[in-house]
Length: 105
Image 1 (cartoon, rainbow, N blue to C red):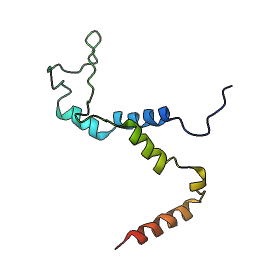
Image 2: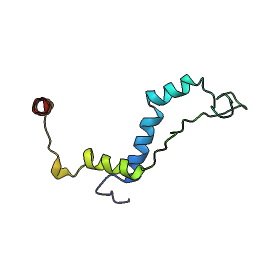
Image 3: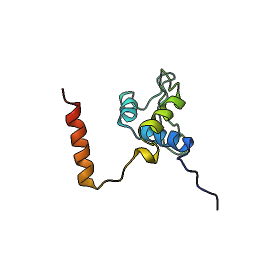
Image 4: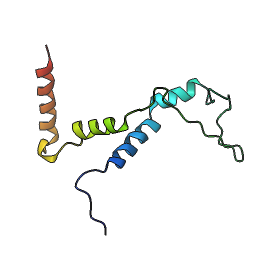
C-alpha cells in the first residue's frame, strides 16, 4: 500500500478548483446566455446519440498562472497544521465574530 504524502498534492488542488469551475453558476450562465452554441462556428451542443457535440467555456484572458492560484490556496486554506486549531462549532463562531468586530472601522 502506498504511503500517503504529508500534504495535499498540488494536482488534487488543481483538480478540485477545476471541478468548482465546471459546476459554477458563472459557467452555466455563460453557456445559457449563448444558447449552448459555439461563438466561433455556430454549432449547437448536443447529447443526441450519433450527434454528440460538447460545448466548453474558454477564459478569454486565460487562467495564465495556475501555480500562483494553487500557491494562494496552500497559503490561505491548506496552511501548516501549526497555523490551525481545533475548535467546537460555538467557539469557532465566536472567533469569527471577534475577527469581524476587529475589522470594523
